[in-house]
Image 1 (cartoon, rainbow, N blue to C red):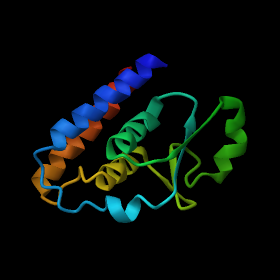
Image 2: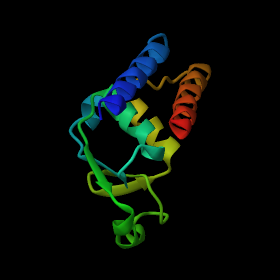
Image 3: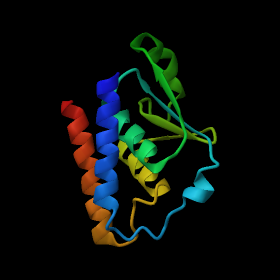
Image 4: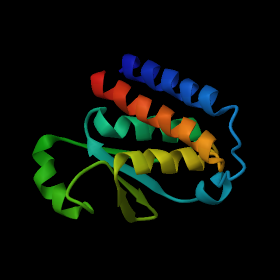
Length: 135
């Protein structure tokens, strides 16, 4: 919906503005942009939305695979820990929503090497998670 797209754009801008003043010297986007990314989650925002926003902000092309609750029983046994979101990178499945959002931030060069600046980015990720939980 247009409301979801507007929220995603707004959150991308927040990520870019917060991380604009960080030391992001470990930008691995060049080597990672050739990888195939597929995000699996229910047909809704939920815990995957921060990951979607982070991937969009990073400029990473990915397949956004959404499914319904009735499809979940067949999908669940194929996930690493029996839950979603799952991000497949070149076919290998990875889980844990904050770890996946952090990975997306690293792809976009938003994740700094300095521990204090990394803390600031982590705060932004967790803030987005909290905002998405009440949205």
